[in-house]
Image 1 (cartoon, one colour):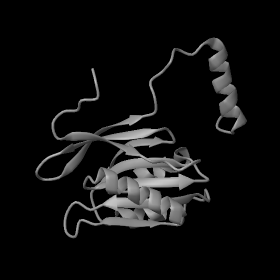
Image 2 (tube, rainbow, N blue to C red):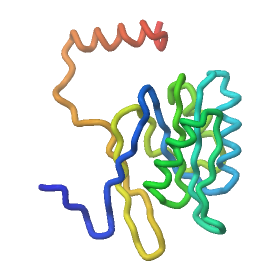
Image 3 (tube, rainbow, N blue to C red):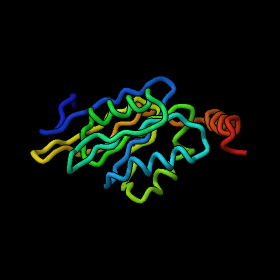
Image 4 (cartoon, rainbow, N blue to C red):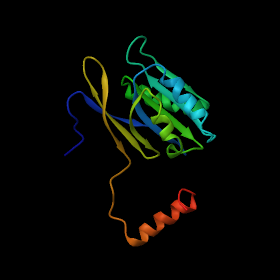
Amino acid sequence: MGNELPFGSKLVPIDLPADCNLIFGQSHFIKTVEDLYEALITSGTGIKFGIAFCEASGKRLIRTDGNDPEMISAATKAAQGVAAGHTFFIFMKAGFPINILNRVKECQEVCRIFCATANPLQVLVAESSQGRGVIGVIDGEPPLGVETDADKTGRQQFLRTIGYKR
């Protein structure tokens, strides 16, 4: 099997700045940008973030917001590359998706989250005469094996070291 993709589809690589995480999702309303901004800015986490949302009707603009110009630019570039209606990107530094993901999912217009990651990311996009849609994502790389007892102990210790488990 090579790099062939079904007719009308393509892989869109997402450029992730150093020390950055992202959340990629789908929503349904122009109010998404403001609601996501409020969810992030009031999270109490002190993250630096940028949001880009692709409108699917009306002016069909990429709507943006955030509190960090670099993150807004990165989110906008990702949205331009995927260019699928009602999708959004949140790029963030000095914070992690795990700390805000539920707040994002609680936004009433958010329909789905495709991924939350700091890994290399590719988005599989389908294209028709109407527009573009997301088929799925390729998040990171394939596994190299199954964890050993030592790996399990290391994982558990790591989670306690960074404060996610007691």
